[in-house]
Length: 359
Ligand code: SP5
Ligand code: ZN
Image (cartoon, protein in one colour):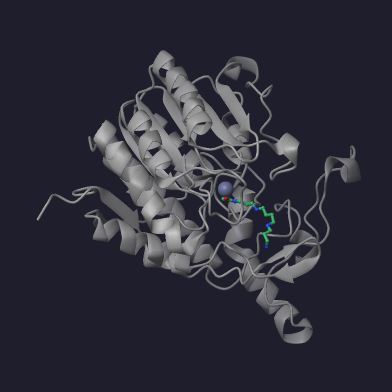
């Protein structure tokens, strides 16, 4: 029997990641079926273990690793809002089966007024959430915490000398900022892993984000940091795509972090050659900065068949991107998006195969 492509690769996960069921998304005012479904995690686990990856249970980490990246109030909100929603009778009395915000305390609303914590749970629901697509229900917090634990466990492995580790995180994370969640993301798993690598003494850390969408959360978390580079290629928000308000090429970092952020927005329809050239540009940045470790935000929603993006990358494109990134150094791979269930597993196996081959 030939050696399997992912033989020996740790695939860190937790069964708790299946417990988050957003049950759809409210998009443009209408509740519809969502694409960030629990089955994504089981499809991915099956695919990577059949390719030889070693299923590795996430270990529970202290909240100190979470507050190193996030506002403690965001964490407390995510951990408690579902219980408050249920206790408030929204489901029983009004048939509201998930937490969906409806008032958002934007800077334009508040002006110079202090942020307050509204008395009503349905008022508080918008305090830390910036869209209507990222619902919270029973089991959500257990999955959110487990996804962060998977990223931290993979970071622990790499800090201890493992060259490549894969964190099968669900829900994904790269759209969540220090204190605001959205885009089907709750805690920023990749940023939590990057911060843990910094704390472990890895030196300069680089995050390379190849999800189809700009990782506005990761960018925001590290925007003023010279020690954590963030580079992303993604469908151009200026062409009308989520997250709409971030991901433009002139966002280069601020203060001491000036120059340590790079966005490469791509036209809808971009396919392998131009997409891989952009991956190469980010890899050149990382080499120049001599990063001691790399975190890859691996979304495979840039693939041609994905329902959430107009990019046209092939499985072989993902394999070649993996080769380029794998050559840079130790890598923690964090799962982000990717929504076409029939092709999802093959795409992630292709990317991971390239990462191991390039190492
Ligand atoms: C982690 C990640 O990939 N998040 C992507 C979130 C992008 N969601 C944008 C949703 C736009 C509405 N989708 C409509 C699909 C038809 N139901
Ligand atoms: Zn995405």
